[in-house]
Amino acid sequence: MARYFTSDLQFSQKNIIGYANRPYRSVEEMDEALIANAWDTVGPNDELIILGDLAMGQLEKSLQTAGRLPGNKTLLCGNHDRPFRFGPGPKRDEQIKRYEDVGFTVIVDPWVKDTIYGHDVLLSHFPYTGDSHGEDRYLDRRPPQQDTPLIHGHVHTAFARNGNQFNVGVDMNYFMPVSETAIAHWLDCLAAERAAA
Image (cartoon, rainbow, N blue to C red; front, side, top):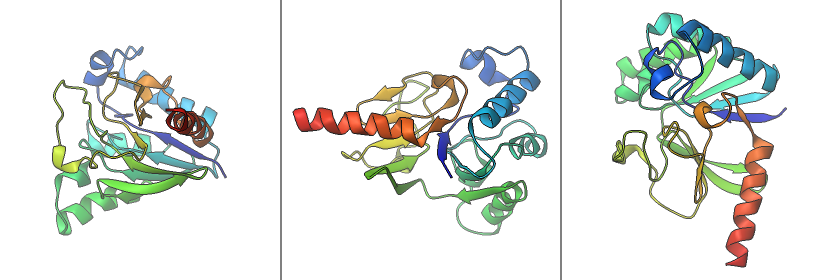
């Protein structure tokens, strides 16, 4: 079983095509390409971790599309995911169930600790610093700045890598999920740079 990471697919969101300069003529073409790219990369028994902003537009339709993604799917919620909007309680639980019903495990914590090939990392929708809209938003949902490498999305085309931040968003990764081995290579290089400094 392999692990893959991605973010900011934003299924059924027409505006993202122009905003992020995606090479698609329609929402339908974009959605189908993102699904096909994921199936070309992720096996049915692999783990696919989406770091936020999965589905937009008419949610029932976009979640049905998102549910066609391959693998064992986990969503760590971003600012465009419905559970992000609610505190603990019945409304959040209702929203989480909508994602679970199409095959996702949902994490509402703003960030989680993980390990990739022996490297400690944080996973979050948000970077330590940086945004797709100029100034940093959602400051209360970002992990506190630290030396731990951070795997994230949210910034779209603002940067691919920035110091100890790795953007797995589709807009900077050929509209495909990023393999854990590719992230591990970056982590090895980052560790070597730190050791040499």
